[in-house]
Image (cartoon, rainbow, N blue to C red; front, side, top):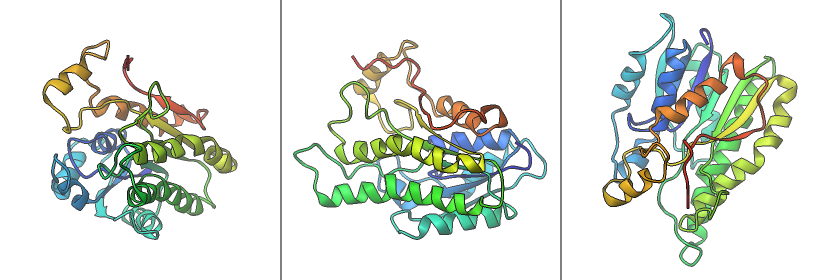
Length: 260
C-alpha cells in the first residue's frame, strides 16, 4: 500500500477501532489522515483522548519512510463537513486520496421504540448515515479522473437474531448503510472503486466492564471479546489490491459470536 493515501474517520482515541485500522494501514505503508471529534468522546463514559498522541502512536508503526500521518477535526453533523473533510485529508496527504474508512458513529442519544423521539432519529441519521453517504460522494467526485479506490463502511449486526431493540435510532441508520452497500458498489464499479461494509460484532473499546462484560465474553467460542485489531485486520485487507474482486458485500467479523 505504499504510495496510497487513506482517510479513517472516528479515529480519535487509542482504544477504538478507527485507531487500530489507521495503524494497520500505516504499517502496510499507506499515508493516513485521522479524523477526530473529541467533543463527542468527552461526552461519553470513556472520555476523550489527545489527537496529537493518537497520531504519534500511528506514526510509530509506519511501514514506509515517506508515509504521512496527519489528523484533523470535523463535526459530521454539519451537512458540508464530509466534503470539507475529504478535501482536508487529500490536501494533508499530498493531494491524493485512495481509501476511505467510515468508522465514525454517534454513541448514546438513543432508546427503545417507546422512548425514541424525532430528535434522536434525526441526530443518528445525520451522523451515522447521511454523513457516510456524503463522504462517499465527495470521495467519488475526487476519484473521477482516477481508477481504483476503496470504501469501507461500518455496521453493527442490527439485522441478526433479535436486532437492537434498545437502540432503535442507531440500528435504523446502520441498517441503512448495510442496505445501500450494493447500490454504492454498483455506482462506483465503473471507476474500479470497491465498496464494502464490515460488521465487527461486540468489540472491547473500553465502554463496558463488570458482570455484563463477562457475560458477553462467554458468548464467544473463544471466551473473549473482539479487540479493535480483530476487525481492523479485515478492514485493512479490504483496502489492499488482494481484495479488488470483493465489492458490494456486508461482511461479519464477529469471532463466532452467539446471540442465544
